Length: 343
Image 1 (tube, helix red, strand yellow):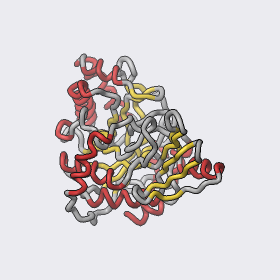
Image 2 (cartoon, one colour):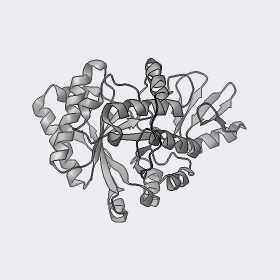
Image 3 (cartoon, rainbow, N blue to C red):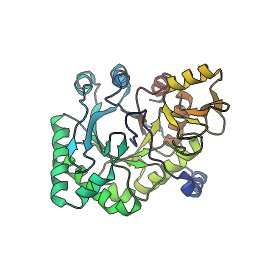
C-alpha cells in the first residue's frame, strides 16, 4: 500500500486538513446501517520480514486473500522487475481454504520511496507502456497469482492523465490474461490524481488506504481516527459504490521525536518503547487510538485490536464488507480474535 519501503512502511504524506470540511460533511450525512454481510479480509505481506510471511501461513484460514507477490517498476524506465522472491506463494497455494486468493502487487516503490519518473516515461511512450503492461501480466500469470493490487504513487496533480493511463494499461493487460480481481490503491482523502470514475471498471476494486491521517512529518496524532475513516470511506463509496471499495486499515503506528520526522513502528515496538520509558499505552478517547508519551523525548500513536474492531464497524456502516490489513508482522496479536468475531 502506500509504502515507504524497508522500514515498517508509511503512507505518502497527505494534507488531510484540506479536505476536513468534506469529511465532516460526509460523516454528518451518514445514514447507512451496518452491513450484515460476511466480512472479507485481505492481508499484505512483505518479503523482507520473515514474521510477515509466517503469520500469513499461520492464519491462512482467516484470510480471503494474501497479497504477497511484489512486482516493481524501474525508477527510470518503468520496466517491471522482481527484487524479491515470493517464497510464500507456493505454501499458501497448497494450504489455502476454498476461495482464498494469492495476489500480486505492482508498485513504483523502489529503494525506499515512490518513483513517478518511470511511470511518466511509460505514459509518454505507448510502445514501452504496452511492453511493460504485457510483462506485468506475464509475471502475474506465470506466478499463479489470482489477482493484483496496483499501487502507483508519488504523483502531482498534473500527472493525473498519465498515471491513470498507466494504471488502466496494466489492469487491462492483466485482465486479458485472466488475472482477477484487479484492485487499485488510492489515498484516503486525496483525489487530485486518481478519481473513482477514471479507474472503475478497469479495476474491480479501489483499495482505499485509510491511514496516515497523521504522517511522518506532520504533528503527532492518530493514524486513523474512526470519524476520519468513516468520512473517507463515505467519499469513495459515493464515487464508485460500496461493492467496489476495499477498506485498507493500519496495523502499525508512529513515534514522533521532539524534532524531526516520526519513525514507523509495530505494536510490539510500541509496547517495548513504552515499557523502556516507564510509561503506559493509554487509549485516546477521541480517536480510539493507543498513545504513549515520554516527556521531552517522543510521542507515539499505535493501532491495536480495539481500534481495528472499531474501524471495521465504521466501514461496514458504509456498506463496505472487504478490508485489507497493512501489513502482517506489525499487528497486535489480538487482531486475530477481532477478525474471528467479525467474520
